[in-house]
Length: 161
Length: 287
Image (cartoon, rainbow over all chains, first blue to last red; front, side, top):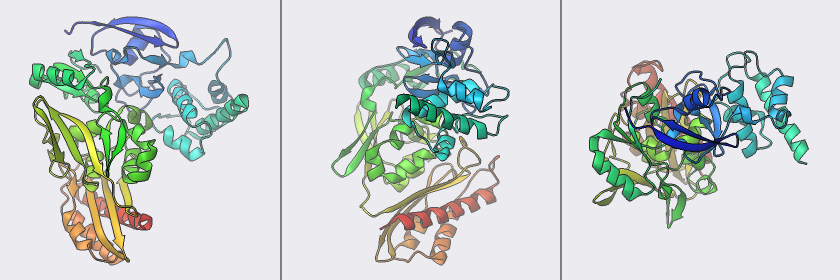
């Protein structure tokens, strides 16, 4: 067994220190050590996107990143979206537009959509479909997910104006 | 799925990485974006004793023009390629190819150097590198050498890289203005490797082909340069007949492996179809 290592990073703005084996995957640290269970384990093979978190302004599948790689990183998960009891515009839009059924993919979807809108505040439908293609939903057929991202983009733009 | 235990190293400079590589030798694997290696380790297809993470080495990142060539640090990610204004202007073929690799999340982490050095025949950069006539800087404890992409890929997961060597930089001569380009890739779904793909760079002169470069992905143990097709097209007008003949010549060198993406005959036919589509699109973009 390899020697455990201390790793320090932030999760949703809060500093955390963990001691992990190098082989521990970030999704396991988040869920099992830090009880941040919003990011889900879907396929475990970097395909489905259910485990998507935001790391240093990048959407990352946390089943395909080692916790030891996160030294000094800023990690954002779905738990970090609500501010002062107020849902984020994306969370509101996913609710209003029925952009989920079982909800398993939703934390990953919203976390990914957040980064997309940071990079491109006014994406076309085609751009949303292209840049959200790393997240699979087996319920909705994506129509309402795309609509929710568009609606949230509109609301965020109105708020910024 | 959890990998076998290993020791993790995150050197902050290239000399430190080379030192670690010589210390641990065959037991060590280099970690770039980790989106091929970590899945393989989780499936226990790979079980290195030491993982040397190149992610903290700043000098391995970046895109710049030096004279008439573009130099790309090996740890530059796919999304960095896609978003580079310099590459959009000088190497649109590379941007188009990178945009068809895997999915957005993977493109934030996956690197051009990892894609090349891993030498999976399903990876897209190897064929793009052949079409762009790139060369690679390989750095070892005893210095660096620069090798051509053509000849670098030896077989499945096998390249000219020697033990203790790191691919540090990709150098690509800027094609002359007016070149047409296309990377045509057939994949079953987002995130999948190509059933077949073709990279084309095309230079036209007075209605006929001055130079055509054609390279194929995932229809052999390495990327394939379709030399006979290239030679055939030289000096010819591009029309249905010449494009079909070039595709036939490209298909004649294919030796794909049958898998869930199709049997040998289908994949070979698709390599021909991708060659045709790439030639037509490249022609429409050539000036």
